[in-house]
Image (cartoon, rainbow, N blue to C red):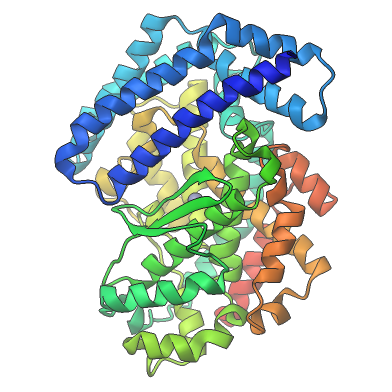
Length: 493
Ligand SMILES: [Zn+2]
């Protein structure tokens, strides 16, 4: 038997553990009673441990190394390289150091929760300092020449360097910061329907109406309720989403649903021959987010998308009865300064990310200390969003990411929007997207995405896929110009 065949047998075992863990996680986040949480978590720990042992066993690592010596096609080679990287990233870390790091993360996450609720940065500060220090130590065991922060950026988005992100955010800073001030200075009032009461029943009916519009079928998916919306991949023919209903924020529920359907559609359209392999789900964070943002913002917030459905939507959601479609479109794209990243609109969102990126980078290269972090956060927030942060729970303490040592993750959120804009532009060269949406034809758009992007799964990284689809290197241009054109029109600037 070839080493690659031995690998596929091993991989089939790991995929079984992954399916079990995904199912338990889904169950826990949706319908399982809270009382069973601790037993479930314990057994999930057992399964994760077993899976870890199979992956990191020296004989398994040898199989991967042997397979690389065989003549493999591009898909097989990428598969083996990806699996080997996943293992080698962790296997050289001494066990005690790894346990210390995992323990620190779970403690820090708990402390962060308390610190946030008490608005007490000083309480979280020593943990943040230790998390940065230990992350540097963990990364130092890698067989890599990259600086720690570059390595972290690469972990979340293969081949993206701080020089790429610097160029990207420079364009965002130079063009979007002044443009956003112009939008905000126009002082247009928020349409009332945005905060009007819409019953859970009406919101559910709207989401059930929209699912087939996006060609999201319950034969290969499911929609359940959870505290935070997410999507979950089980197999090629089983990709589920969750929703939450906020009765005074209907648009939040609806667009989170569309966002998650974007993720689920991506997973569901990967080449079925990749089923069970690592590359069926190893798309980069930025690429995955590009599809959710394309669904949510570029399709879901457009006039052409809603036009053929708006009368039906008005019949489902009673507060929209007297809202014209133009008012509706303005409302779902309404720009508002917000302290909180997850509540930010499409236009101001990248500024929240830019701020975090600049701070993370400075924390890792030593030019910023954890003592000065809240002050510098607030100064940057004032410079970019013209708001005075009055308490840290609305500032530096708002996100969970740093408490879990997820440094280098944030920039992929903005990158996803920018990739999405470039893909959308490329799609426009092949299809008349607006005419298709006006004709309630999302299927053709979905087919284009499958052909050009989704089928490849994790075969290409973001830079590679952008070059392949868009025939030019990645830049912020399409994204930034797209936003300026869209919002100039909406705000008549
Ligand atoms: Zn997402």
